[in-house]
Amino acid sequence: MRFAIVDIETTGGFPQQHGITEIAIVLHNGKEVEGRYETLVNPHQLIPPFIANMTGISDAMVARAPSFKDVAFEIYNLLKDRVFVAHNVNFDFSFVKHHLQESGYHLQTPKLCTIRLSRKVFPGFRKYGLGHLCRELGITIENRHRAGGDALATSEVLGLALQKNGMTVINDMLKRENKSQLLPPNMAEEQVKLLPADPGVYYFHDQKGKVIYVGKAKNLYKRVVSHFTGLDISKKRQDFLRNIHSISHVVCPTEFIASLFESVEIKRLWPAFNKSQKRYEQLWGIYLFEDSRGYLRLAIDKKQKHTRPLASFPLLVDAHRLLWKWVKEFNLDPVLCFLDNTGKPVIQDVDSYNESVRKAIAWLDEQKQTFLIRDKSGCVLVEEGRFYGMGHIPEETELTHISHIKEKLVEYPENEVLRSMIWNYAERYPGKVVKIAS
Image (tube, rainbow, N blue to C red; front, top):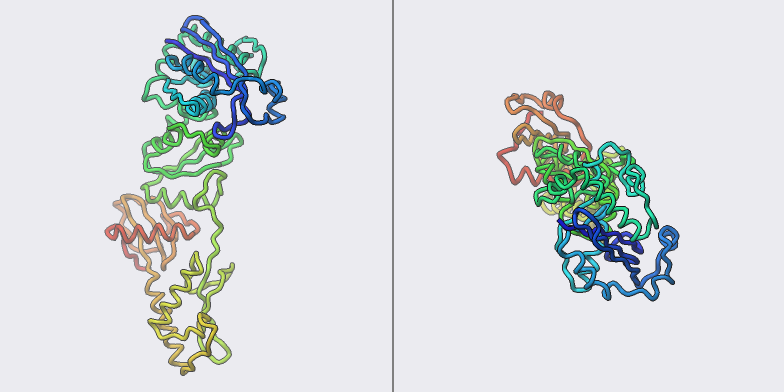
């Protein structure tokens, strides 16, 4: 087996936005080093000061260096028939593959991460960054944070691993079905292996243990692994992968309950990398009051804490739609409902008008049903039109009264996403809806 050990220096962390300033390739035949290649590269963009200080590569040094396109053919030919090896391979591979593709070359070669290889061959070290690993293994790094020095040190790591029967591990890691090469470098492979094939909610944590992403799954193992497949080189994805250090999960009775629980957790934790469902809900309500003349008035206003509207809505237009429906169906006055500010109210008898308002409210109350969505052992309770909670109730359990059901469920806060999912599900699967006596 032939290897190409690669290290690059760049102007930043994202292939689409940043350039390569230096690349080094050490060719290894499985027994010894058989060749080296190294060159500075002109990225045609400024090198940030902190990167220049770390690497020692300045704008002046790369000004007369070749562009990547000028050396792409040579780099491609060095890599194409070898295993691409790097410490945190996904970073180097994503840059090199992207810039080769920009130059007209499509690199399709297996890749090997020496961080993951070292964890298997040299277990028990506190850290596996290149500097820490080389100190543990007694490897001297010359020209640290330069491509040539880091690539040569990585090749020595590979050589020591091969001497310790590492080829067996490497062959296993390179198998197509082995997913460990796809995982973020800071996350242990064992955490993914322990994931069940059950429905549930999973959490990605950063280095400090803070939840940075929440997701739901029909199959927890497959869904988590799917996050790391493909070669998405966007800034968002690369930043996401670098921040993942651990994963935890909660098994749910059904995929539907997992979807509801995901929504609850996104609202509770507000994770940095979740985008959907992360908007503060500006609820609107239809309120009832009696004016000085004795008329029952309906009005739309923003929903405030400690207020109880007749109905609440995520959007103002939804509240208007329902109130206009009542105006037409129950012969209400749009002026008295604050829907028409252009005219005067049509004077009606107070008692007869108030009776019409009461009929509209009675119609609304009829819609506030109490029911249970029961799918296998998973149960979701809606009480008088509002989501109460959910949980696991064995299928053989007889459900007699709402108070008994509540004892077995966990109560959660309602939100508009939850409400929409529940009513859509109830309409799609009426056979899973059980009416409950309150």
